[in-house]
Amino acid sequence: MDPIHSLHTHLLYSSLLIKKLATMATARLLLLLTVSTFCFCSGAIIGIGDELAVEDQRADAAPSCGSLRTAVEARNIVGWKTVPPHCADYVESYMTGERYQRDSDIVINQAIAYAESLKLSSSGKEIWIFDVDETALSTLPYQANHGYGTQLFDNTSFQQYVAQGNAPALQGTLRLYRRLLELGIKPVFLTDRTEDQRAVTTNNLLQQGYYNWEKLVLQPVGLQISTLAFKKCERQKLVNAGYIIVGNIGDQWNDIRGSPDGARTFKFPNPMYYVD
Ligand SMILES: [Mg+2]
Image (cartoon, rainbow, N blue to C red; front, side):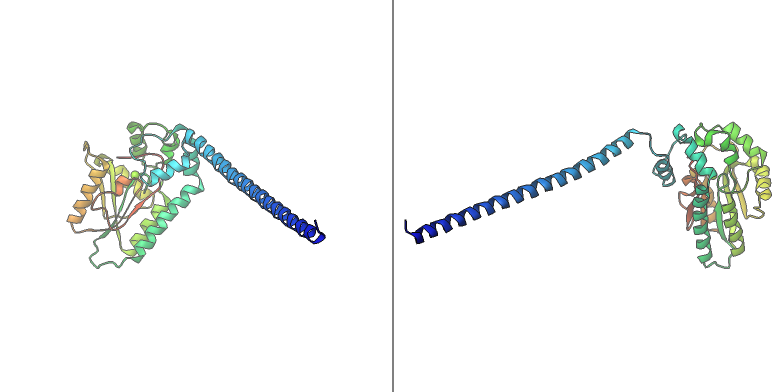
């Protein structure tokens, strides 16, 4: 082989060797990238898997008391009888702590802002409907002795609490009440307390600073209908009498549902019991 041919052959092999090495390097790089990508994705999958496992554990556990409370307030859970036992401490802490006050204040502040925005007629017929128990007057002293909703509702002991006539005002509701009077909107108390409790209810309201109202509507003794049906019917009577229901506030959805419900309704917080 002549030297030139030999050199040419050498260069050719060298070139082929470099190409082969380059190809191998590229393949190795691709392999590394593939492996690292797989590992990364695999790691991500493992991460998601861990979270799923956490979620699975949560699903197996008792429902979060905070989530239950939110679902109750949003009316995603209805017809319930008692607070789950594992939520007793949570509900007590919520009701006696700042959170309940803050949640109540948001409702009341919104109600006052709405009332202040109204352009009232000169008819004097604008009214605001208030529920009584756990809206105008607190049942917390009673609930504190009965498990904050973890015990089945006992009508006898609750009526004894009402009969004492010492239920404290819920201060946020009292603030709304006073502002409505200043604005010229007349309060109407609509409650499923019964007529035989008119005197004690009147005295309790007066004692707690609710000093004036257009009407106090109570249930006839022995009436066997739901709160929802009773209140809806009574609101219709008010509308038929020419009143304009500009606002309606209650701690139960069944205080404020059903036409005529009022121009605006406000759900006051209550995670302790449910009324049909
Ligand atoms: Mg109530």
